[in-house]
Image (tube, rainbow, N blue to C red; front, side, top):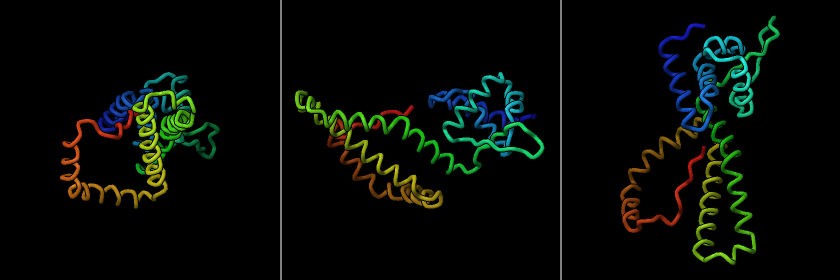
Length: 194
């Protein structure tokens, strides 16, 4: 398959961004190809189009399947597996958030709960105990919020995001005043996911 300049630039950039997000470049490029192409492709077409080794494509497709970002489909009269992804950017966003939360965020919350419930925590300094519990509270709150957001339809989620952009204009002056009152926030910033 011959890529247009626009498609090629998108796929290359998506691969570079994938690397920044902790995703293998080939995995991100394959997903980008399936997304912009919008039609199911078999592994040989993917390998030829992106000039990737067949083994690399096979491993990347397995990873994308594990992330639930692609699905296998079939074409009448062809025994090969074809791969496709959703063309709905909201569905892709929700899948990525859900998968990353499950793989990266939830295990951290589970560890923090274990640590907070461990009697040995009482032997730690009061400041360390407070930091651990504050981190757990923050992450549980953020996790509950993200679970609620993931339950919303894409249309409702988009409305909330647009509304949030408008609401921030009203709360920003109060946030600025609070930020100057304390050099260090009470709640730690969220660690990077990836």
